[in-house]
Amino acid sequence: MPTLNWIGKDAVVKHHKEVPFRLLELVPELSYGEADSGNLIVQGDNLHALKALLPRYAGQVKCIYIDPPYNTGNEGWVYNDNVNSPEIRRWLGEVVGKEGETLDRHDRWLCMMYPRLVLLRQFLREDGAIFVSIDDNEMASLRLLMDEIFGVRNFVATVLWQKVFAPKNSARHLSEDHDYIVVYAANADRWRPNLIPRAEEATARYKNPDNDPRGPWTSGDLQARNFYSEGTYPVTCPSGRIIAGPGKGMYWRISKEKFAELDRDGRIWWGPDGNNMPRLKRFLSEVKDGIVPQTLWLHKDVGHTQEAKKELLELVEFESSDDVFITPKPTCRVPDDWLIGSRRGLLLAREVMLELKRCI
Image 1: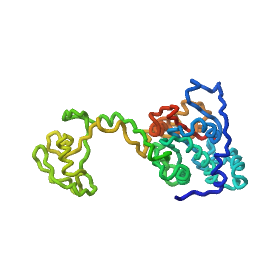
Image 2: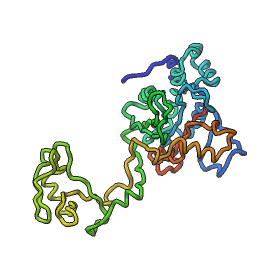
Image 3: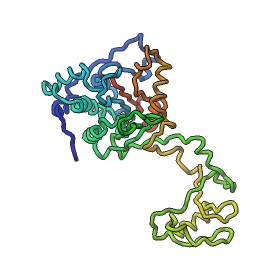
Image 4: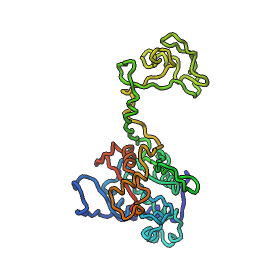
């Protein structure tokens, strides 16, 4: 398996073991709700926070979402995304040593990410998964890093999130319209995503024009372009019209015997007059309760950064709108990570979710 090497790696590979366990200190004036609800917001260096939470949640987390620094090299943000802050430099000096002073920003990013990902892996249940937001600056490095820590076979997918609703005409080369959400499972053989609830308009497509006792249905094409040795045969419509076979360059998806079986069971739709090209009936009562998650998330479905910025401005008073973090995640998008990775977003002792934001 290809591995990623960088300056300082040897110093951080086992650093998670050297981080001391710490006690979490309750701040009553900042607390809300029942003390035993199980919900926590931890302020501080996320490496120390993870080590403090590990004894309680190791092997119990079903879904982790993290939004690490993208390492864009932009030092003008409210959050310093250049991995060049005094805190990072001090940490590198302590952990990596004098060699850390000469690291480029990609080396520093990798040194920062490695021990945190190693700790996060220890939180996951066997049927858990982690979702990581990132962009092109560190996408390639992140994949290799997570292959090493979580295992190549546990890679699930890379989701493309359309983060803007219009192209950036000021772009130097191409308008960067998307971010990534990289998904890994603790054990890909055991993890299964939840289905996305079916939209009302999707359910509305199911009708019952022939009053089938099995209820509403929709129809699917019985023809395909893929070669199928048993997929060329004539069929006879209820009207008596003989259809010589599928269209030019097409094949029936099923054998002649299977077609006859489905027709006897009333699962072939020949049109209202019994004279159309046959289609396969799919009953609402027999399909899954939702839709299999896809790897393309459009802004119209899950929101975009401008929408998220507007949400922030409604909640927090800023001296200037320029002070708002420029790549927030819309509230209608982040729950998709949770809904897919956990059970309807429930936060239970056996169904723990962990969200790790940029806390360095």
